[in-house]
Image 1 (cartoon, helix red, strand yellow):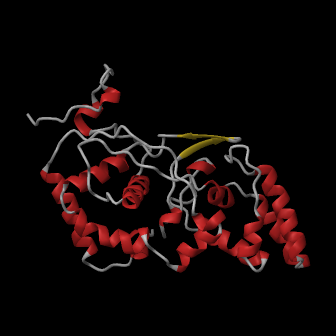
Image 2 (cartoon, helix red, strand yellow):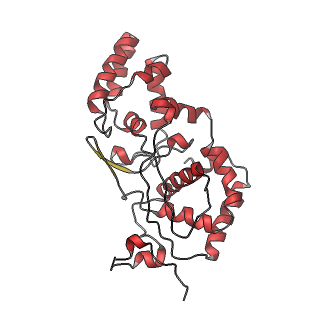
Image 3 (cartoon, one colour):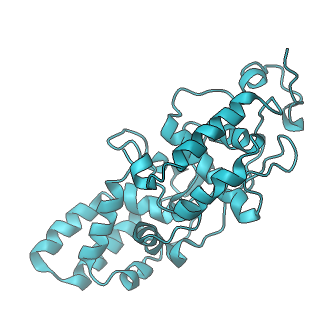
Amino acid sequence: MLKTLPRPSAYSQLDFWVDEAIWGHRLYDEQTPWLCFMEFLGVLNSEYQKGFAFNEQSFNSLSYNPYSRVYLRNLLFNNPYLEVVYKDYEDHRDEKRAWEEWTKLAQQSFAGLNNEYPNLLYLQSNFEKFEYFYEAIKFLQNNTIEGENNKRWSSQFIFPYGKECLYEDLRITGDKVQNDRRFFARTGELLYLMLSRSKKGDIILPFFESNILKSNSIYTRLARILQPNEGDEAPLPDMKGTYLPYEYLPEYSNLAEDWVKIINCNIQLMTLFHI
């Protein structure tokens, strides 16, 4: 029988410890492969910013800081009145009127800002015309992960063009923001730990570094200018408690080797993942 690593101290008093003892954290049906990948990227980005990418300091001590990107998410997924304002704008082509009408509605409806009044003036500075703003929103909306789903707006994700597109699954009610494990159920964390323990992280990292973590593509820049301070925001508090039972399994290396072979095919990121 394989020897397992000790469970984290935070879970030492739990009596019901079955799935975790076998797999790590539970395998949850609603976390699809895409959402596993997005959760993984959030972990990788946080550890990369700290200089620890694919370098586990000690077993099962992972502590990472994801982002909320609340402004971006409101703009893309909690913004139904944009269509109404834009249809009116097509008739009158009055920039000032369009911005004022949309801003008034947005300030009344944006959520998850911790009682902060949404200052949206930066958008008018970043977009010369209201039409350009509208087209930017529509483009990123059309690149929603697993589009045409019925998930709440705070659990919608866009294609990971850059680190400014990475954020945590949240439950947002009014100004109250809570971490939620419904769609980010730690499977992405386990993927990160498996690749870290494969000892092939230094081979895999440059691919993610150039395509996502340090990306400056036009799509990444688009996501930046939709956010205050071009996406420069404070991360959320530490996420802790990830548990992967085994120090090493051949499957970790096999998984990493599959990634290496795919990366060596020199397939562009959008072609590789964008479906």
